[in-house]
Length: 265
Image (cartoon, rainbow, N blue to C red; front, side, top):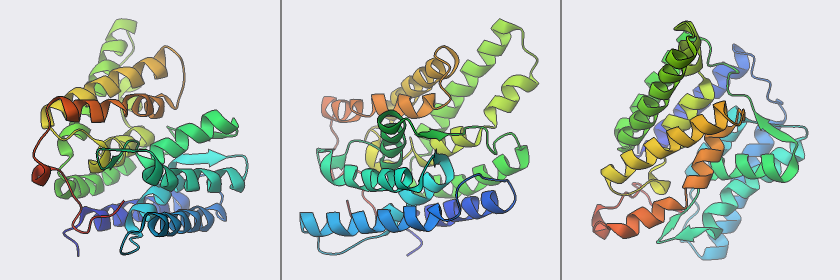
C-alpha cells in the first residue's frame, strides 16, 4: 500500500493543513474544508461512473482537494466548491495521449481566479517561517523519492531561486530579501506537489528539466514584472499544453511511462 506515492502525499498534505490551521493561522474557512473534499470525491465518483472505470479510487481527488484547502481562498464557500468540482472534472474532460493535460489543483485555482474574480491565493501566508518550510521540504522529499519526479521540482526551485538572487543582485537588495522570498509556502507547495505531478509532467527527464526552467522564468515574469502574486499558477497553466507536444516530439515506450501502483484517472 505505502509503495504508492499518493498515500505519502495524503499524509504530507493532511499534516500541512492541520499544522497550518492550528499553528500558522491559515485563513481558510473551517466549514469549507469538508465541503471542498466532499465535492472532489463526489465529482471523482461521477466521473468514474461516466467513463466506465472498474472501480472508484479516491486518492487523487483527496490530494487535489487538500491542495485547494491549503492554497485557495474565495469570498464564498460556493466558489471553493465549484473550483473543487472543476479540478476533478478537468481530469476526465481535458485529456491527450491517455493523460490529463492540467494539474487538477492548478486548473481549479487559475479558472476560479479568472472566471469569478472572487478567488485568490496568498503565497506568503506561512512561507516566511523557515522552520515550517523545513518541515514541508522534509515531507515533500519523502513524496518525491517515491513518485520519481524530484528532478523537475529541484530544477524549478534552482531556476526560480537563481532568478531571485539575480534580481536581488541587480537591485542591490540585501540577502534577507531574496531569502524571505525563497521561503514562500505557495512556491514550495507548487514545486513539490503541483509541477511535479507525475501524470502532467513530460515523460523524458531532459524535457522535464526544460519545462521546469520555462515555468520558473514565466512565473518570475508574472511575479515581478506583472505583479501577480499567483504568477506561478499562471505559468504552469499556460505551459501545461506544451507537455503533450514534448512527449510527441520524442516519445518513450508505453511500458516506461509513469503509472500509479493502482492506475486511475
